[in-house]
Image 1 (cartoon, rainbow, N blue to C red):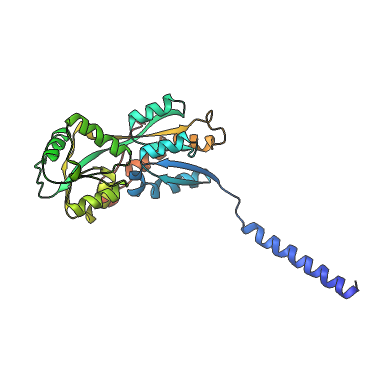
Image 2 (image 1 turned 180 degrees about the vertical axis):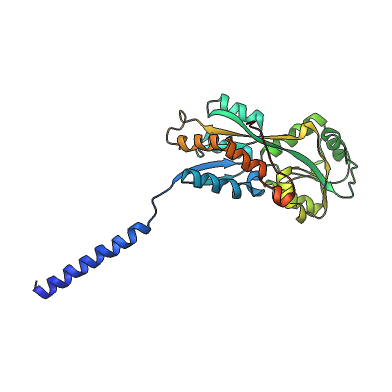
Length: 278
């Protein structure tokens, strides 16, 4: 190789090294990732849009949210496809932990369910207890729209029907197989009744012009959310450290303050109520 060619090769190599050096600092290190399986209500209400960035910044991580019904969230946990769960069906939660899939169940927050329906209220349920309201809906001629998705809301609905000892005729019982927001939109289109959580209802009620809250304040309609870290004994490869940090943070004074304040500015009151007394 001639001296000219050698010189050009050395210069080219030096420029390549310099270009790589210039690019390298701009490449951020890969962030630790947490997979959170949670209910659609926490997602549809916009709660995670506020809460998740606070957690990610504090722990320098990324959170992947899988928003599904509680039943599906627990199946993800049982299959080792989620590090931590935020769910709302106590009976299923206790079984999940008892079966060894969760480290422990911890209270996080609560709100409540509403029975919503046509503003004209053809079944005449306004102000009744939930069980009595469901009996009148079953005896009436208007549709009831169920989530039908094994979610915490669907499980609550099924328990109320069981307590009522009746159910609408199949022709009037519509299963959406979808999340709370989509179910509310179907009920709005059909002028039917449904069971809805406070957070999703308040987040979307302006778009639901045919519906109104008809039953609320019944102790049977309390809706409690908990956090469960998926067992590292069952799934050693899961991110147990970050899952534990998430569980601790959402129950910490800082995390509970985010819950307490979420929705106040937009809706005049919180969409969830913190359950950890500090």
